[in-house]
Length: 252
Image 1 (cartoon, one colour):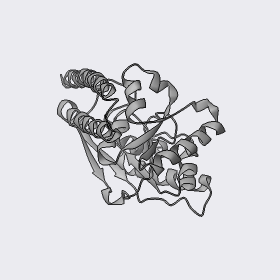
Image 2: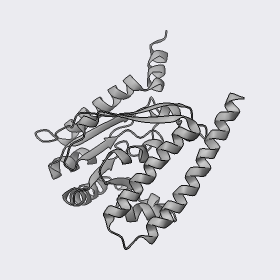
Image 3: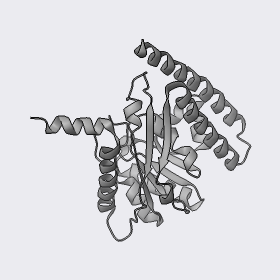
Image 4: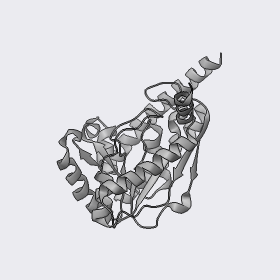
């Protein structure tokens, strides 16, 4: 019975999200003439509405910790990527931000087009290697100079909770070249919203903002290791999936 309720609640949230995302994307496309600030404000409010809907339908309550660590000046956000929730879940808490995304995402009708129009993402070809890093640095410096923050998922794709991939160096390189801080974010969204699964589980989703990291005076690789160490250690602290994996590895 309980599992059926979870399934129905999750399906209702999925339908709600699909309908409202399509409507919002269409509305934003119709506002192509409007100032960027208007479109960013609408996007942030929609993301907040999605968080409220996730709490209403599925009992996923999002809380922000470490708000005092958010700098006043535009910075580079580096956030763990385990599921869909964090892609929009951090948006209401930050100034307008541009994502680094795979270019195929911007080809999706309506939603992808709206992302390209509103978020002004840096759409890269992930297999391009060093040229992709240079693209992030060049375009990212332009966004930051215009007062827009930059959000990067350093592992480049979604990774199951409890696992990690090599962190890409583009975020640290961009921050150093632009002379801005890095804001690391860890979260336990994967505990309640497992990757590639319909069912969402009730629980508190903690978005933890770490102290800003200054990339100056060290190489991007060294900065990357500091960012990765903070994010992964915080994930181990707040994520039940990480903790379960650690106990399993320690078991004889």
